[in-house]
Length: 300
Image 1 (spheres, rainbow, N blue to C red):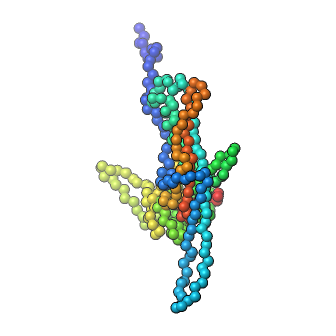
Image 2: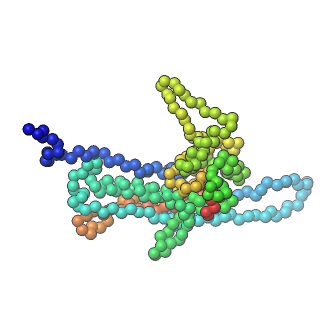
Image 3: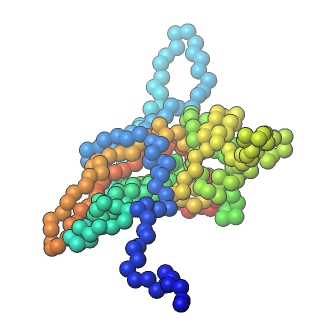
């Protein structure tokens, strides 16, 4: 008689893992690297100043005092930006037993909170976003990183096919050193991380490759770059605007918090549950000359 096989069976149980795999990255390197500061208005301002250039200064005995030219401070400002994500789950979907999560609304809200955090990183460093005051029909936006760097420190490599190089990075570090800044980090895209790794291929440099039985690996990465102007860590950021490299000190930037993230359940409109996560933030560069952005093509 023919063998009874699984193809003829009826009523087999499903085999579904209780683990939901999510490949989407959630790290926000720039926002995570800088401090926070509370603000109290949707438009906030701050001042920056600098010392005059050094000059020869020697006076005769009994000299007569002369008035110096005094330069005013520079007033900077930025607006806050509201970010949100709203989920709506039917009562049946929330009650139903599912694999990988105890309750659908809780799972969807967890995803929403991660998504808006990524949106904040994107607004800060991924779009060359400009400040906008907004109105009743247009959302406010804050000026992102690229817009808060002095025009003299927006270095263009020369074109869309001229990429980050070690001489360009050294030029940026020298500019900041001359201006009196102390950068400690270089934030790069994936493409430029490979180019930085290639710095080690320059003539006269070498790498140590361990071939022991317990540890066999080839390291092809640069985590710390030491230059005549100090050392900087190399940081990889998936959300950094394509073609940009940011040379900065995290202490010179602040994530400004007007309304920190909060979750709220909205009024019921039927057999469902609706919740939103909202936050209102902005960005402050304490001095526009303390960072450099290296760009592969002029786009500011």
